[in-house]
Image 1 (spheres, rainbow, N blue to C red):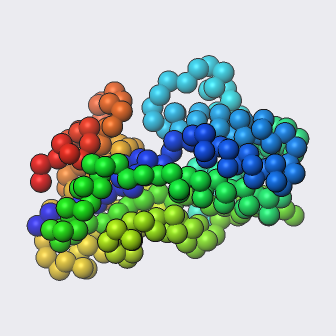
Image 2: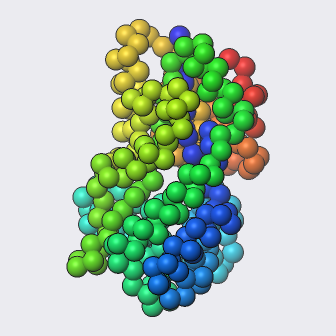
Length: 279
Ligand SMILES: [Mg+2]
């Protein structure tokens, strides 16, 4: 029997594109909150996030972007000192922290209330505009129709809160997980059992824990030997940790045909989209 383990963001749905709608929602919210320089802060936010994302995707950054990213990461580490200490992981994808640092550049100090309001508006806009890739939806539906077991393994959205008194960010895994699950409601509406969605809170990808949890759940559910297949859009975040956790077969969805650095030992199949899979 084959059991599929699927990544969600930028694999099944398009998430990381920070487009006009999402940025307008953020800027409008900052204006309503009477934050000065809302437009500049929004631009700074988009720029920082794109540097982070491009780097993650293995794109080459310009020298000035590299310096910018270095400064950004150093401030992020300061603000997340207690989180790194307690959870052993940095939450670099937190939009709340990115927004806070962007506002600091314009001498604006955002409170927790403002950060929650603005980041909620941003995530709402992202959620409203994260369509399934048509090929991914077809694949998901075929799994459901054929009663083929599958599990979704997804990163944390790193929804952090800010402690105004201590001037640091706090991470409550339950708070973050609940918000992510709410964002993924359409999966549940499309027939994915909620208990088959494993979220990287508190231990986020590429940590092995969330993959091990998914495998354990499959073993418990199925009570028979199976062949496990991980499908994701990131070698570093999906495939390499999946293999280390014991998943047998690895498939990379490379929609943008990014040149993959293959000097690693992993043996994986690479396809452009789900339609190219022959199961
Ligand atoms: Mg992904």
